[in-house]
Amino acid sequence: MPLYLDETVEATKMAISALRANKMRSFLTILGVIIGVTTVMGMVSLIEGLNKGMMRQLASLGSDTIHIRKFKPGVFVGEFPDSLRHRKAFTEEDVKAVMSFCPSVKEVAPLNFTEAKLKYGSNETRTMFIIGSAPALSVTNELSVSQGRFFTETEVDHRAQVCVLGQDILSTLFPHANAVGKLIRIGNAPYTVVGELETMGKFLGQTRDDMVVVPYTTLFKKYGKDIDLYMNAKPTSPDKLDAAIDEITELLRRRRGIPSNKSEDFGIFTNETLMDLYHKITGAFYLVMIVISSIGLLVGGIGVMNIMLVSVRERTREIGLRKAIGARKKDILWQFLVEAGTLTGTGGILGIIIGLSIGKLIDLATPLPSAVPLWAIILGFSFSVGVGMFFGIYPAVKAASLDPVEALRYE
View 1: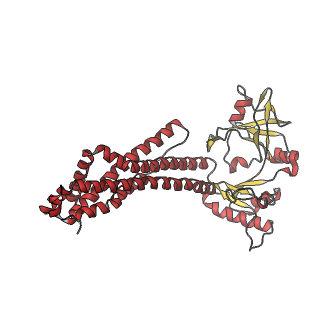
View 2 (view 1 turned 180 degrees about the vertical axis):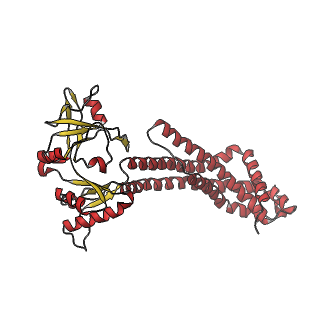
């Protein structure tokens, strides 16, 4: 038979009265539950905050940018295998073919990379990541120039020694001057600054304003075959992203002579792939969180069962009196189950408050953001109540099974 709401309310009131009567004992009993739920709330708030921050940062990189590399990120574990390192690089002809024969592709930017220090007068940077590319990079990676201009296709064709600099580089080399038109040294070679990039902020805590972009042909002239060529692409519209990936994949398979029964020897991915990889990493943290919180809740549940058995013994005469005046077995059973659930539910509420407070403090004191979805709060509270009611079953059954006559005689 279903239990009525007023019976549940009455049982809850009795449970709260019992908690108030034994404050310290109740607190020590639910300490494990508090620790478990606090762990859950704290970890969820940090992980969800990081997820949202990661999504915002990936969106700032260009939500529909297609990355074409030798392999996808996260495809190996441990030492980097030679089979991936020695894959065939892309060519300038590949870049032209993708642009010419993939109708869903709006723009393709060739990419190569090196490292060097930048110097202007007595000012010098640390060793920086130098990006070689073409004007198409401003489209594929959504770059904007605040002063001057991006270098041109003509400058790319003539392997001109020109560059575009990010704001961090500018503040180091030109703290009080306009950089456009100035001659700097990248490594041991002179380059003319033709443009200043707009501020781009940070990605995963690392600044994006230390960007240095030069013509990719200029890097090839200096380093030859010591550096590889890659590509970034942009679809004609966001809804053409999958079509563009399919077209690029099919074209490169043909150009690289890959049989239909073999997998690609290159990797094509988007920022969504990076987000999936990030979720796999945070999933490991969730697993650790579940293990730690489960231990806390298990300890709390055992404590609840122990204290409820003590409570049954202490209130044996009360149980006998209630039965003598008409309380049914299910009424006694429900009373003790609600009391156990109220006990751990209180611990769950305290754990939620402490966990959210810890997440907020970390948010205020560090660059790590925090965010707690409503489902996490509901799940934390429901699980804590469920633990109490599960571990309270045995004491509740024992209380409900007491013989009223024997109970009234109990001293």
